[in-house]
Amino acid sequence: MSILSFLFSGDTGGGIPPVHPPAPPDARPVCALFLKELFRGSADFLLRPVWPGGAPVSGVWLCWIDGLVDAEAVSEQVLRPLTDSARLRGAESDGERFRLLEHGAVFSCAAQVRQTLGELAEDLLRGSCAVIFDKLGSALCFEVKNPSVRPVGQPTVEKSVKGAKDAFVETLRINTALLRRRLRTPELELRQMQVGRRSGTAVALVSLRGITKPETLETLRGRLEALDIDGLLAAGQLEQYLCDCPASPFPQMLHTERPDKFAEELLNGRVGLLADGLPMGFLLPATLPAALAVAEDRGQHFLLASALRLLRWLALGLSLLFPALFVAVAMYHQEMIPTRLLLSMIAAKQDVPFSVATEVLGMLLAFELLMEAGLRLPDPVGDTVSIIGALIVGQSAVEARIVSPIAVIVVAAAAICGFLMPSRDLAGALRLCRLALVVLAIFLGLLGIVLGLSLLLLHLGALESFGLAYLSPLSEGGFGAVLNALLRPPLPLDKLRPEGLHGGNRRNQR
Image (cartoon, rainbow, N blue to C red):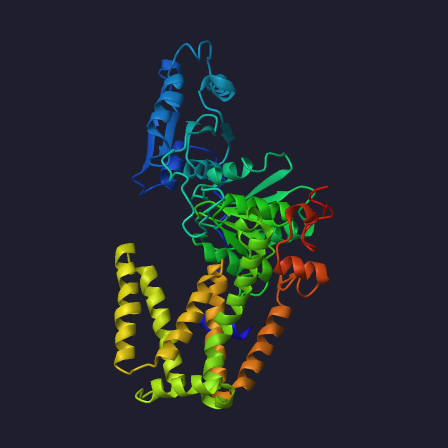
């Protein structure tokens, strides 16, 4: 057992309690009585007897889950033609009525024949209504989903100036339609699976035939099939179950709320993952250069896009190292500070009762508290907390000589650089590493920073995401590949897909 598994399993020596296997689907034949027993205690389950074609026939039932279906569609598309004598004229038995309904007597674009109770229950929970024939032990399910879903809106996290203004929503089929509008090709493949014993979350694997590596697709499919959990309800759960190294804080799956970026990465050879109920798409394999790229890079002039990409790399280094370097130099290597700057720092530090280490650690903790408070509170209150914390409390702390102005500037500059990261997960990993480097700088000075950076590079160098090195192409490609990762070449010259992603078709243009 690994150390992390031991710490979080709650095992005290008596062994890990056995995991109960998932309950098998109900294989009993379809029957209204059995179905009513299955949904006992559910006030939203509705079951009513009907007379097909208006004839007084017993043993035929119409059932649905209230709220998951459109009541008007059930009445107009299913119930009205079902009870119309003209549409079922000449049907003398339940078998004949069943065949007529299956072949178009009901106004529905999709009809599924179900023979077992488990299959029928799954269809009802996905927004279908069912006509049950007790004597036949079968049911016909018609899709009449409730259309009241959140409409497509603008991206809230990945904002765009020149790009598209639509974003993924919580409905899987709407998300796949947004993707189809950008990639109008039959080579776009959508393989749907179900994850979660009790949540039954629909998950779609998205790939481009002939471009995506089959090995990556099969690896992802195998890991999804191996999932044995009660439910998939949060976005972070997917990455923790599917990534190669769950103990690493660095994101090993890219996520985006923008369909245009999702489609662009599919064209590069990545595999996409869409889950019902999650308003974002996941992309893999992930690399550090890909986490620093944004969708608008390809929509801007290559000089501007290259400058902004270099600025993000610089911000990554400053966010990671600036507080630790300040602590190390101020505590152990004052001779490295220019004389006039050193005199200014001494003058600002004279009346401050705390050490540099205490100041920086306290400011980093205060920054994390403000970040968490701003996220958890409603928007108007969160904005107020940010203003109070940054202006009133921060300014008062400086005037009261609790912290020095230089410490506030260093921590604020590192925080602003962290905000430039396109991935919030990457920014969170950088905050953890930044705190660890500050602690090492407190005890070992510059030697501690070098030691921490060496361990960080060793970790990133050994990290993989679905068979691809996390630092690729910085660690594997030649000079041209490294240059393409740091800069954005002109689009007419960018003729090849990234190495390690494509499945043999590397050229994207002539």
